[in-house]
Amino acid sequence: DAGVTQSPTHLIKTRGQHVTLRCSPISGHKSVSWYQQVLGQGPQFIFQYYEKEERGRGNFPDRFSARQFPNYSSELNVNALLLGDSALYLCASSLAGGVGAFFGQGTRLTVV
Amino acid sequence: TQLLEQSPQFLSIQEGENLTVYCNSSSVFSSLQWYRQEPGEGPVLLVTVVTGGEVKKLKRLTFQFGDARKDSSLHITAAQPGDTGLYLCAGELGNNYQLIWGAGTKLIIKP
Image (cartoon, rainbow over all chains, first blue to last red; front, side):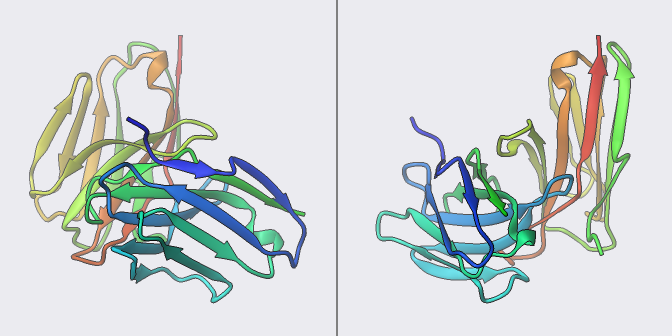
């Protein structure tokens, strides 16, 4: 069975551009969470979606948005990229959110 | 301000030695998880503890949740080079549906 898959694996963008990151959860999982992990730090919570509804939002600016589709896959969008947005973006899926999340390999975003 | 403080931040020891990693907070967590992360990969869940005082064992790894559910420890017995990695603790606050993460402990086991 496929685990959590994220695309692309690596991405280089210029300041001011927009980026869309994609995540497919484990089959049967209805919850997707997004995290940002800056080098040398633990992940920081960005969003959680469950059954296509936003269930939680971390302390990130409005430039960050996300959505979940009927097949439970998800997109994370970041507008007006800043150098500080460079990070590993992680997607995690779980049956109903919270305990026991399974992570994808992440998307390494570099903003230049 | 980090809600979950992990210590030590970095640990390099010889194969065969024992070690303990700590995760402390002033907040009470409904559950706490330990993950291991390899460079360029996502974290992999090792264990979830939910009951105060709970102890779980995973081969040479022993995880303990504090009685007050504010802290946790990970003890590795007879460390192996394959244990090398970044160990992260993450706590769930009530039903907030989000995980609060520590900054991680980078562990290197030298052969």
